[in-house]
Length: 458
Image 1 (tube, rainbow, N blue to C red):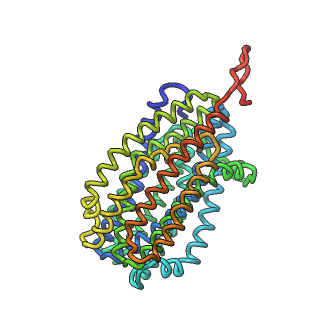
Image 2: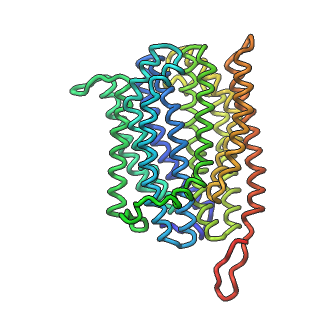
């Protein structure tokens, strides 16, 4: 375990974010590799993969719930130097993640056909989306235990094994995907389903390698049969912290579904342009999200260790880093949006819609960085309700006006993007104000007793 209650918080953030950034880049490559190969199958195939990506947002909401709860409990226990409690949280998070993954898989297959018909612009897109989900849903299921294993390592400051394993498995995915999509050699020609099958195989391999690392190398957190017996009290402790954080991702999924529903009448090119633009934006955000994700375990350990000064320093350092990076990304997206879209499609309609999306949506990048950073600080402290409230308010201010506008004469897709920008600016400001209130309430610790007593929180 790495002790982050000592030393420079900025150095800890940069070291953690470097590994997290590489890890997230690898995860995004799973999606971008699929999109690259599928792009040659036409705009309907691109739109189908984009629709399937909406389901991944729901999965991210659930894995965020589990991951945040796991990271917070383990990091705070590590900050208190309470290894048995950290190990209990680790084993219980693994049990809960497997259970949730199985339930999601059953539900996803139950609604697959209706979901594809409802959101697709045409029958061809719906058929391709159903084909892709046949293997993409199992791929999402096996993400759950992987998230639990990775979150436990992140909480204790260990990132190298996760990055190494993901680097290997993304290579497996990138090699296997074109073979299964196009039917090279002995491999069957599966089209879009081949891309999803390649991802499933790669994630299964990642799980096997991660479990092997825990068994052979990692000693701080171990698999223990007695600790794998379900304990509802520990589950609730995780969910109490994780559910609001997962709810934020759930609201993001709702936002994307609303957008797809509103723009469906503009055709597959519009849906594909939004899908590609959103994937490009996700890739651009990687270094910023990496810094934000690094904040949670650093804050968690220092909050558990009753170091309020270091909690504040972690926040201000991360906010400065993310704001600077987001400003650079705003310039890149605004002036080079068409270049990024052309990497994945040559269709003029897809390029036009995707370029306009990136140019307008980039206006909220700095505010989005503030949202990521402040939400992660709340996670480290263990109070994830305030950012959920601001996210719900933001969605209300976006969804209702967007739905009304979509029925007005002269409605254009750009109106949706401008509404999105305004709602994110509101959310960013609200998060910053709520976090200052949280600091005043939670970061007042008594000094240790003169004879060596432990510090306590009033």
